[in-house]
Image (tube, rainbow over all chains, first blue to last red; front, side):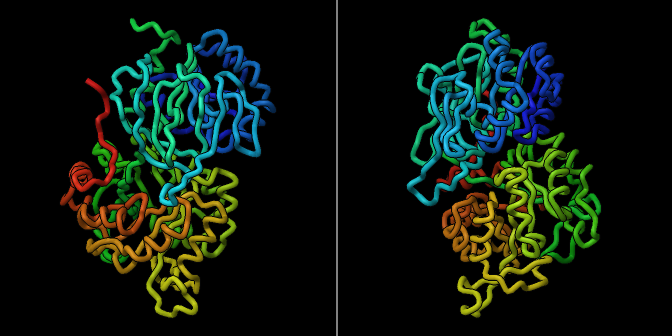
Length: 211
Length: 263
C-alpha cells in the first residue's frame, strides 16, 4: 500500500487521482501506524514551509517520517514536501525543517519584472543523473511548477535534475538513497509526470540500475 | 525556460459545452468531460471550465462535472461560475480543480480573494475581469472600466487599480477578458492586457478574441501575457493544439512539447 501523507498542507485529491489512474492502491493518511506499514510514501504539500512544519509537529509525524526514511521505505517528496526535507527554509521569517537532505530553501528574487513569482507553469527539467524514477523520461521534458521558493542542496551529488527560472538554475529534482523529491507537481504534469509516478510505484528504494 | 501556457476554455450550460459571440447565440459543442479529455491528450497546458449559468440560476457549480474532469486529465484546471463563498471554493478544489476563478463575486465582496488565498493558497485563486474601454480618464486613468455579469454591468472601478487591489489581496493569477474581442477571433485586446500585465507581479492570462496562432504570439509578445485562453479556433476544428504550438515555436515563443517519454 502506498501512503499519501496528509498533514493539512494542501489538497491531495490530484495525487490520489494520479495513483488511481496508475492502478496503484493508495491511502491518504496521517496515522503513524499506517505510515510504518506502508510499502512506499508520497509526501506532498502546498502552501508555506512554516505552517507545513507546524502541522507536522502538531500531528506528531516528525519522528515517524525520519523512522520510515531511515528504514529505506521508498519515499517521494513533492513541492513543499520536498522543500521541508532540507535543513532550513527562508520562508515565514526562517523555518527549521526536517534536515533529511543537507541544504536550504531560498526565495526567487527576479531582476526582470517579466519573471512573475510564483514560478507557475511548465518548464524543462534537465537531467543530471540517471535514476530509477527517470526511466523512460526524456531529458528536458516539461513539468508543471507552482512555487516561490526553491531548494539549494548542499551536496551536488543529490541533484538529479535542474531547471532555469528568474536568473537561477535550481534543483528541480533531488535524491539520496531511498528518498527522491521533486519541486514540480508530477501528479499534474501530464503523461511524463504519470511516468515518473509509475516508476515510483515500481521502485524498491535502491539505486541498483538493474531495476 | 518557462513556457507560455495555452489554455482551452470550456463554457458549460446544462452540462454541455457551448460557444457564443459576445456571450450570445450559443451553440452546442459537446460533453465537457469528453472535450477536456481530448484537449488534455492533444497537449493543452491547462484547462478552464466555466459553469456559466450557475450564478444566474443561483446554484453552486456542477461538482460532479468537476470530479469527472479531474478523473480524466492529469494537468491543472481552473473552474468558475457558481462559487459564492469559501465553502463552494473548497468543494471545487477537493473535487480536483487546481484553481477557482471569481469575477463578479470578487467585485461585490473583494474579501473573498483574501479569504480564499489565506484558506487555500494564493496559487489557487484566479481573478477573472471584464474590462471595457472608457474614455473618462479622470475616473478611469487606465482608460478601462471593470464590468461584471458578462459585461452587462459597469462597476465604476478602474481596471488597472482593480487588478492591483486583487494582487494586494493575494490573488494568484489574473485573467483579462475583453468584451470587444470576445468570440470575434480577431485577436486579443492587447492594450489592456499589457497595462495589467505590467502593473502586477502575478501571472496574467489573455482571454477573448483568439483566432489564429499569431494572435497568441501577440498576446505574449505585445500583451506581455504569461498564458492565453483559446476557444472558438480550437472548438471549430480549424486549429489543433499541436499546430498552434508548432507555429508559436517556429516564431520563437517557448511552448511545452509533448515529448512524453524517451525512446
